[in-house]
Length: 224
Image (cartoon, rainbow, N blue to C red; front, side):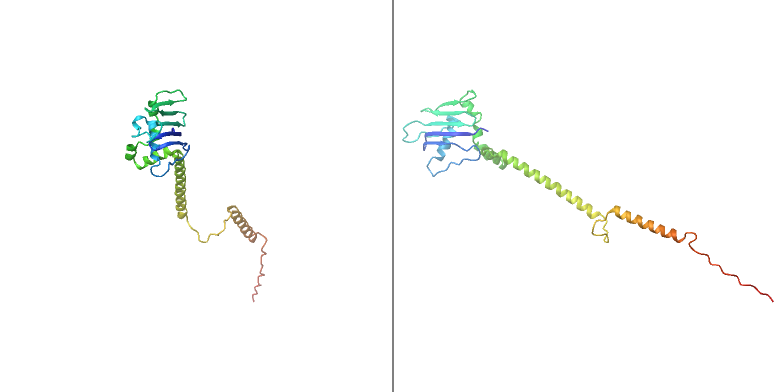
């Protein structure tokens, strides 16, 4: 976007002489009391860039000693001058392009609002136009992209949390399970040791020779 680097105006409407250097970024506010020439400055800029179709009525300041003089420097290096009774135009383009008012018309609309079109635009389009003129449209677009990315990330995390919670609710619950984590390997080793001990005890109880036989002498049988 082409921006205004500096403005000089003399003897235009209520302005005797003024020089402005708008900030490269952000918004430049032209303030003052009623009748001090705020609108005159804007009219001078529009006249310098827009040509005679934007020339204000009663362009020359009352009781001025000389004719209106305008000089606008753009940040692309183009210098626009209007001087003399007939406000003759002089356009200095460092790149060598020529065309006078035609050259200015190719980018003048980028510097100001087309009010009829602006009033018919949607609220979103109006906001985009104003932000573009202020030079912060790209920065805000980047912030909006970051905000949307953060929202999408939170949305994905929320969905995952609900899935995990649902899976946990579907799991079987054992009320007598220990509160602390139990090692599966240690539990298997303990169980194996218990089985081996039980096997040794059972084998030792029935080993041959461990039990001594008991003999009972038979009683003699006497017959008369």
